[in-house]
Length: 251
Image (cartoon, rainbow, N blue to C red; front, top):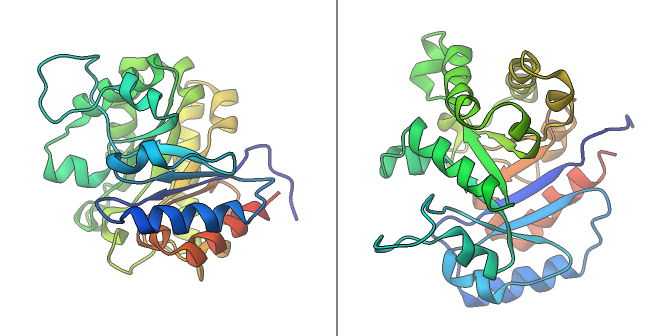
């Protein structure tokens, strides 16, 4: 099997799901495994971040404010997330963009704030089916990347993880074929390489969109796919472990 210079990441995005029982079940299941070649990240709802701690996996938050503190009812600051030992923060997920009106400028500000706090943003990009069908896929993705790139600069991208999530494949049961995923991931890497080839080569680019235990291996085996941002399957310990192990075997 080919050697990879990039360590795979599998991040589980629970979204607004789960409970205290699942926290315990997932933690116990993951701690029974050894993940030598993959970084496992669990992103439960905010209320469970303080109770889910482990040396086997890292914690991620599903959202953050770009403000340090103040009169922002309902928001959570990065310093608060740091106190919960959070290492990763999902930024720009399509659900945040669609349901909470987070445009490219908001997303860029959050990515910058996450980096300033010394945490790792999982920066989400992805197109709708209409954009893909209109032949504007690469133009659209480039604009999402450039909105952040123009704010933080190329050097800061060395500390960013990109997650490509085609909107048409999120929670629909549809999944991009391994070839479709590779095509887009290669484009993303090439787009970054226009600014800095070394950073592009080392950047971890994850695939998200109905990843499950059955398709993870074929998707992750693509040369420019460095793991996944997993939705529904991350709520099922056995399925999530299967996905993590698929990434663990890549190296």
